[in-house]
Length: 380
Image (cartoon, rainbow, N blue to C red):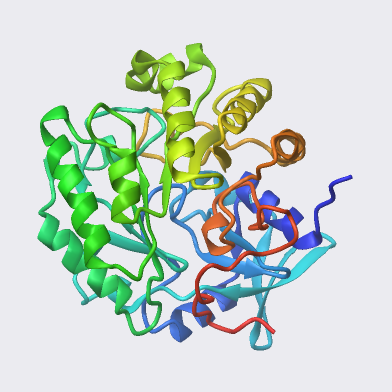
């Protein structure tokens, strides 16, 4: 029978209701972290401090600074002597703060973070301003409605990634290209971007997260170029709910996405094609149907608890509660076990905003593919 540790319970509580940070802990982090502050202002799902708890449990904790629902959080990050600790009632775990890179600091060029943001040991490149699709749970189409949709120059994308990889405090050890779907006229630009990024960083694993619009993902060619992993996110499995919150995905059809996942998994191999589902935007049963559909086709399901962004039409919703998250986690583990796969991602730092604890594909423990990120205080 599956069980969750104290640290894992604390992570799920934070994903459900957020984290409160005491003034002493906040001050200690800010003063010790070279001026970068607690976190980078980014997507709602990544705009929180990244903490490591006991047992390699990683969490990007929602805080009131960016996630209003966290105003009443009962889980607390506190300072005890010169150590951080997370506690909620009788639950308690030591905590270590994941340092932000130097280029996140004020004065190092905000324009860099318009291209690249580092989360843990991974640099996420956003090659588009805005998106050709409008999903009501995603902040990308709503953040800058005046400037609107635009491509970012490929050379600037590569230059920004180089800064992230060379960062003296928190160097990025792998790359995710994500953030926005191109218009059909810009598909070739994206194909060139993918090729040039992979070529520019031959020793760095490169993952792509993209909607499989026609022409934008030539999986055999990407494999030949050296692509590491691919993410084709369903996000919402229920057709009616998908029509309400992600109309363009609804129009393409669920079968189109699932077929692409299956074909991509045949090319890239087991464990190399992920698909994310947003837990809390549909019924638990629909999410579990999605987990099974992904696993059946050789994909790796990723469970991302819905975290409302205030700028979106769904900004007033609440995340799913603690009991729902644990229910989905346990039942999803049973499903993936039947298909010989696992809940992704397997990299512990990259599991920080997912309903997962960074176990390897066999469930035997953390699976570090890259050096451990730099922490404010190194784990014992």
